[in-house]
Length: 242
Image (cartoon, rainbow, N blue to C red; front, side, top):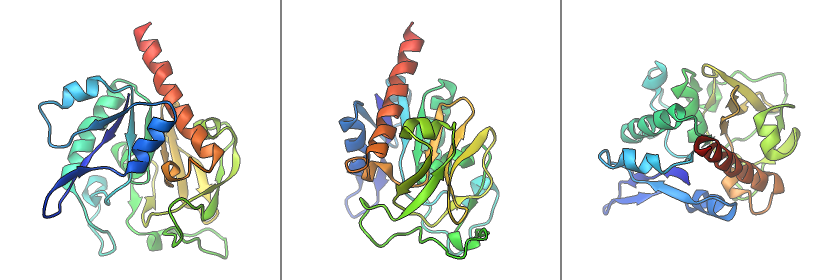
């Protein structure tokens, strides 16, 4: 079962939500989505005991105070309640050595959890010598790829995508990893130097900056990423039960 945290949408009638694409990607690639209810502190241990892996989805900006910075004007809406709930969920997953996949905000939160930091807005990122600057908040549909990344040979990401080298991704973010967290390594970069993926040396934790859940129906490599993640969850479960 793949745990996916829900969050409270603060409309006139509050709703508990997560984008359907995450649930669909897990369900269609061999996993069983386990939707983790927010504001359920009493039941959280019982929910987490059922979890074989954790998927941290995209969403709001992470509070810069968690990486010891003051909030800049370009930093958008913060949700301290989500930050706190994710800390409890992620801590349990790390303690149990479960496979973890972080997507967009999920990758950024993983990085902060392990002591890293973020660029609060892409304009503050130091660019490399490329003459062009990529657009990381694409105008085309979420299901369309908008730029390429380079995946490092020998990385967990390369094995889950079934190949290293160049891959096409979508891009829907205005923040990015600045300093990778402790025990995390960069495993993919965009041509402008933006960190597109991080992973740990134990090959259990992967964070990606793009949204593979939106691409996996049309891109075989993104489908393979979800199948590999869910496969890792099954392998870890079997090892624990052996």
